[in-house]
Image (cartoon, rainbow, N blue to C red; front, side):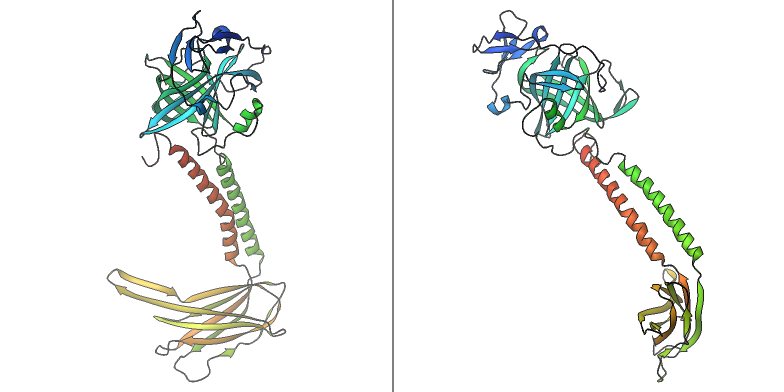
Amino acid sequence: MSPDTPEAGPAAPQARVKTLKCPNCGAQLAVRSFENAVTVVCRSCHSILDAKDPNVRVLQQFKAATDEAHPLIPLGARGKLRGTDYMAIGFQRRTIRVDDVDYSWHEYLLFNPYKGYRYLTEYNGHWNDVSPMKAPPTVGSGYVTYLGQQYKHFQTATAKTTFVLGEFPWQVRVGETAVASDYVHPPMVISSETTDDKETTWSLGEYTAGADIWKAFALEGDPPRAWGIYANEPSPYKGKVLRMWGEWLLFTAALVVVALAVAIALPHDVVFRAAYRFDARSKAEASFVTEPFELKGHASGVSVATSARVDNNWIYLNYALINADTNDAYDFGREVSYYHGVDSDGSWTEGSQADEVILPGVPAGHYYLRVEPEGNAMGPPVAYTVAVTRGVQNGWLYVVAFLALLVPVILVTLRSGSFEQRRWAESDHAPNN
């Protein structure tokens, strides 16, 4: 049966109720589905009675704990689901055993004289609105197909009825078993149950928030908190991951366009260039200041590039870019080193003979460089060139922006994967299997 809103029909009449007397304990029993009831369970002594027998024959008796006799939706409660009034008439607990551990869920049988039966199931605070299917799905290997949608196999286990209350349109028994299989396509689930006589029934369920169930039946208090991830619980990240990756691509493309536009618009004017020679063995003062140069226009990035003819050697330069008008200084140090050789793994190289640093947002004005070189006292003299370029952009700013855009997308993607991993960890197809 499709989970869509049922077709409009006549309003549900008040359910007819007849009264039976339990032959075991004498308690009065209200039968709400009238001639549809096949069995009814006595609340007082938990006898399962034959509602079709004029003498109300006892079919089975079972012992139940008192806390199990209080369903969250009271029997006789009325609620509106998908625009149709239903009454809760039956309740059962069903259990599967996996690795010597019992897992139980509850099923509530609902009845409407015109629409018939449907169910609400609850496990650890997770609810499903379930209805019988008029036609079975197409069964494949590890999946079923229904209305063009594929549902993946989640779990198959033997379900045992361990507690019943109320009335049912079949001869319910405590202890009866059925092989139950679930196929999921969140928020939908298709379930099959095959009894010992090989009769198979199919049902279609839709994940429903407990708050919606409470509202539909006007129940007091709050629904039980949902624990864990249920088989067909819709992921809060569904659709969000693809949407965020799409947005990330758009923003990244815009970032690239901005970077290219800025690179084209900036002047990249070389305002100073000079060549020097440094001998670490010399006793003369090594530090010096360059000829002054002018940075024109608006504040912009300034590149200080150093190239040195080092060969298995190094040079370190303490720089200070000083504004001659204000004495404001930008202090920084750069090392240029280059080594190469051959070993058992072949030839190798390390370092580079060129280096560049970008100082962001340097105001216009008259500047000069103070340079203090250091080097290997055992090495040969080093020739090096210093160049200052105005109007350059700092690529690291775009790298930071790129990462800032990427990090939340990766986090959501990881959370989505974690959600699905936790879902399937409870299935027959757990990742660690």
